[in-house]
Amino acid sequence: MGKKIVAFICVHNSCRSQIAEALGRHLRGDEFDFYSAGTQTKPQINQDAVRLMKQIYGIDMEQTQFCKTFDKIPAPDIAISMGCDVGCPYIGRAFDDNWNLPDPTGQSDEVFADIIQRIKLRIMDM
Figure 1 (tube, helix red, strand yellow):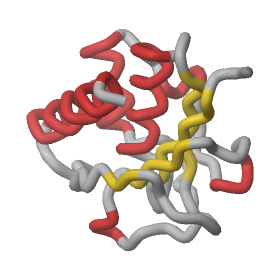
Figure 2 (figure 1 turned 180 degrees about the vertical axis):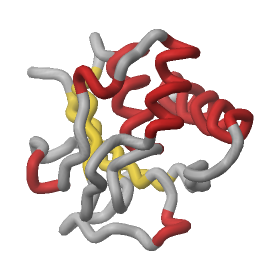
Figure 3 (figure 1 turned 90 degrees about the vertical axis):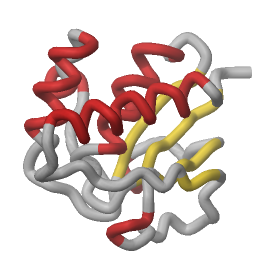
């Protein structure tokens, strides 16, 4: 049997879910296939997230990822909501988990780094 597909879902698929996809692939890509998606998209990944992921992990999310909607990824075995502070997206099924992470958009680098660290710990606990 193949690897389980894990999908990280946010409304806009531009920040937390993109970080989780990148960290998932980086940390546990040999165990799971990671995707991220939203119910809407933004024209680009959050630039603070891109910059800090390059700085902390050397990962360039813009090389391997883009904003996409839920219907553009394979059906996940595990669907994780990043946090419903902006309204939970509807994906046609229940979420397996809600990580309740606040959106760091527009916040300081310290707030972003904290969210990145929290996502890393959740991925390692999967």
